[in-house]
Image (tube, rainbow over all chains, first blue to last red; front, side, top):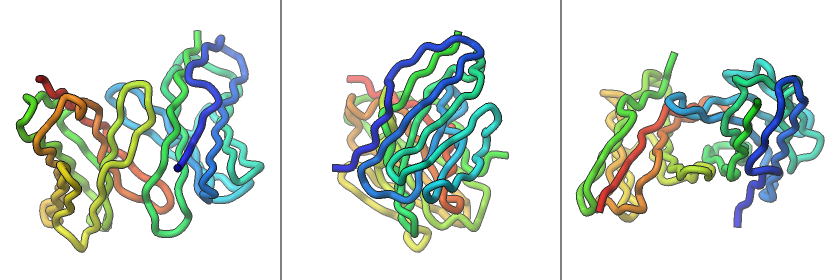
Length: 113
Length: 110
C-alpha cells in the first residue's frame, strides 16, 4: 500500500524559530512536493524535487527552503518562522514520467505564535 | 493568474441527489485532469482523472465530463452520500507538478 508519512501532525512554534518538516515516501517515487493549504486559497506549491539533491521553486517559495539527500525523504525548512506561515503543510510524491497522480501525506498543521 | 478555477466555494446537496462540481481552465494545452477529495485534517486522495482524448470517465458513483471547447470539466456524484462531504479539488499537470483549483466544499445532508 502506498505510503507518504509526515513527521508531525500538529506543530506549534514561536516566531523566529527554525522549523523542519519531514516527509518520507516508501514508493520509490522520483518526484516529491511540498504544498501549503489555506482556506480559500487551495493548494499552493512551495517547492518540488525531481531527483536526489535536485529542487525547483514552486509558486510560493519565499521564506522556505528544502533538502533532499535521499530519494525517499524530502524536508521543508522554515529558516525563521513567521505568523503568516501558519498553515496546513502537505507533502506528496509521484513517479517521474507520464503518471500525474500524486500521493499525499496526512499533513502537518503548523501554528506559529 | 489562475489557470484552474473552481468558482463555487461551496455546494450543499441532499443525500441521494446528484452533486455537480465544476472546474474551468484557461490553458488549452492542458491534456489531463484529476480530481482529488480532501477530508479535514487529512491529505487529499486521488478520486478520478480524465485524459483530453476522452469526454467522459466513470468510476462507480463518480463521473467526470470534459468539454474541451468550453475548457470546462465537471465531476458528478450520483447518488450523493453524507460521507462524500469533503473539499474537492480539480488539478492539471504542469510539467512535473500539478496546479490545483481553490476547491469546492461539498456538504451532503441526510
